[in-house]
Image 1 (spheres, helix red, strand yellow):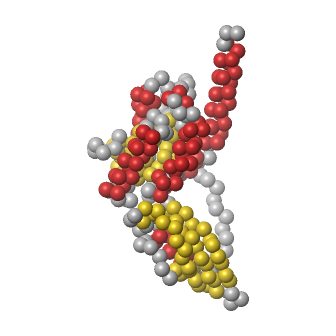
Image 2: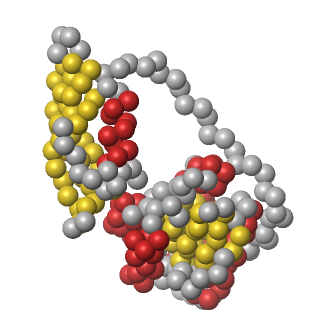
Image 3: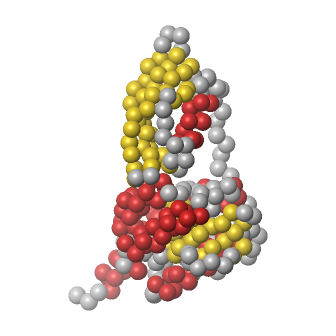
Length: 268
């Protein structure tokens, strides 16, 4: 998620300047063009509706920026790169999408996210304010684990918001859960509703949401945001997020086949 300072810099590079803006460190949660006028001489006036998180919560205001747009030749974006090969030996696969208990699920996602971060040259640090804490150079990564995306899971995510307020934006923060939580009482539709309802808030506070493939601990999917200042880890997540639709479809097919099998085997 960008800040007011990022917005100011982006428009300045295009030759457009704002008259007034909120403090530059405020987080921007959304932005829409309300009006735009271009003179025959090429001068532009743009009215933007910017939604941002200030000291007293979220705000939405109109802001005017003016100038003469500097045109640049468009360069097509490069194709997504595959992540670098793993340095560590891959973790073993699980035979099933189901978990028998919360304890089993938490142990599984703990091992998976820890393995990924160690593979990306993070070292586990000692602190008691989150479930896991890793460091790479001067940056920390605070992680909380949850078996379900429910109210308790939201509380674990909000704990990370408090930690970010305490330690600042140079570190990374994330909540991790299983990719499919149905065996623990939360349907896929409920998971997706949870993400729609809370994803924007968590993204605004730079809280990542990550889920571990129930059968393959070497595949972790990102939601909301990517980690900052770590191109290797970000490249891994940019790659896996493209695999999520296929994995979701595969799980839905598995669930439907299991339901049909139960119907066949049920006594008449």
